[in-house]
Image (cartoon, rainbow, N blue to C red; front, side):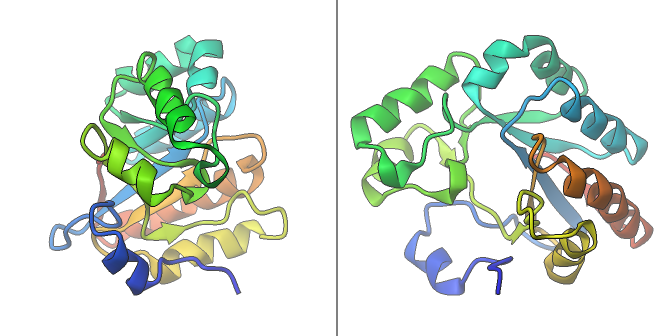
Length: 202
């Protein structure tokens, strides 16, 4: 069974991490990891435009270096960006100094105090070192768009069945996730828009 939502004990154990935004405004927070991608990210931006939706893109530094025009387009359209490390590092497999340096290398390209650890994997020591400079953002709902065994329909259902007011939702603007994400995202936007929700950046 897939862990679409985050267990309560993890949220309690790591209170300094951002798991969800306040409820009460009928607002959802779409986030996109691993871009920018020169073909996929513009498709996401066009879909968001159709619903006047804003989102937050957690960008890998080396992708920003490769595709600076796509990165600029994200900002030009009024979205927010966040740090996803320079090289998509797994914090559990990376020592503290290297991880810290990699995050700050990305920051030279992604001017943001938001950080999402790739794979959601970050150690307590890394949290302590980085939380003074960054707001470390996790999520409320994981779409599993990246999972090759997940269908577009399942991806959509994971979001619709679990996303509530204030939820931070994870999609990916990457080649691996494109099939599921590009099928599910317009349906998510349409479904919640019809229910009076708005989509805002973090």
